[in-house]
Length: 126
Image (cartoon, rainbow, N blue to C red; front, side):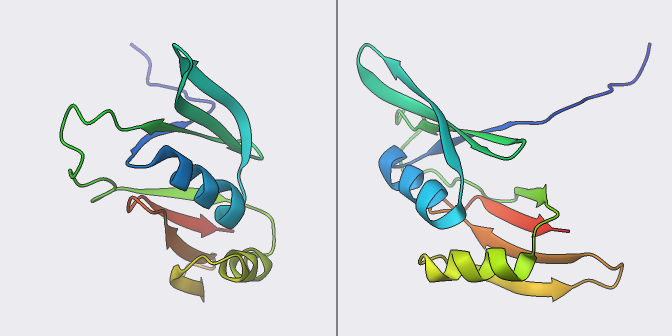
């Protein structure tokens, strides 16, 4: 048996308010809409893209309770070759709040942290 040899990872996130999350991901964080997903004429999910990074945000249907915690104990890392200072500054200028400002880590990487309206956490790193 061989070990998994993945070539890509895409995440799917269930959100409380699809339209509010869409605005945050596109207007604040900088993702582009790749595709809208409808069922019986109703928008149920949106595929987002930022370079090679893909996210699917899904409208919570309430089956497990609308007030359940989302994003707890979970973080995603996006690696980029872009200027972290410029990215972080742009996010703040568009109304975003950084959980951690751009920081030089002891192992040499630079990073900052942000979370979406549902508490999903992202680390943006070089």
